[in-house]
Amino acid sequence: MNLENSWNTTTPAWAQIEALVDKVPGWTPIDELYTLFTLTLASANLEGDIIEVGSWCGRSAVVLAAAARLMGNSHVYCADLFPEKNDWKQNADGTYSFEVVIGNKSYGGYMEQTVWKDVFESQTGKIYELYNGVLECFEETVSQRGMDDIVHACKGDLAALLETREPGFKCRMAFLDGDHGYEAVCADIRNIERCLVPGGWLCFDDAFSCYAGVNQAIEELIIKSGRYDQCQQMTRKFFVARLR
Image 1 (cartoon, one colour):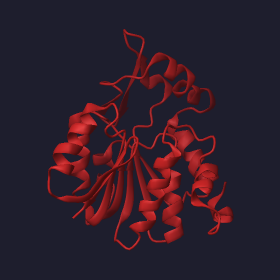
Image 2 (cartoon, one colour):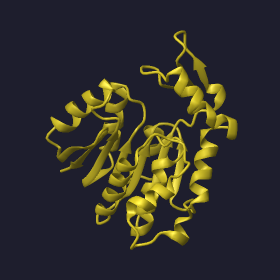
Image 3 (cartoon, helix red, strand yellow):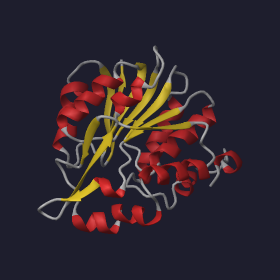
């Protein structure tokens, strides 16, 4: 589906989102993608762009970009470690983790909560049968949908992405789905707050599901902080909050 030619204002967005992400590898369910799409449209009156941390193969990135293009006033900046096949290692218990070296810095992925062997072999590992790496898959997802002018990828974490932006960069919405460890989520929240505009939305995947670090960071830095309103678990694993 190429958005430039086929997005229709009278066809339900839910159905068009399903078509948009059809066959794109990833785990973000349609109800979560629909909520991301809706919040992107609803925040169009705010200044700033959109940030995604943890983009994988581009499943949610193209949905954010679809809404951004309809509003015509923002870009989507995506940070991911984009591991290649040789970055993965099998742990002693049979599960998988990865380590990526970017520049002089080493980044770990799935270190605390590792990937089960059957999931890696049936889903994650299949990507490397078709692509040289996750970034190649991501770029194909974006390009095939005609979104190269809106979506911009950064191989690295959120801090690395923000270093590439100009002084005074502003963000009106951020979707955090990166490292799920407590310290990493806290770091992402603090980094986003450097550029998130008042009234902007901060969204979390895998919230209040099975990741204690994500839950604790949201409780301490979002819900109890007093800096956010409209805090709400929207779907089974998707939490949003609006900066006051």
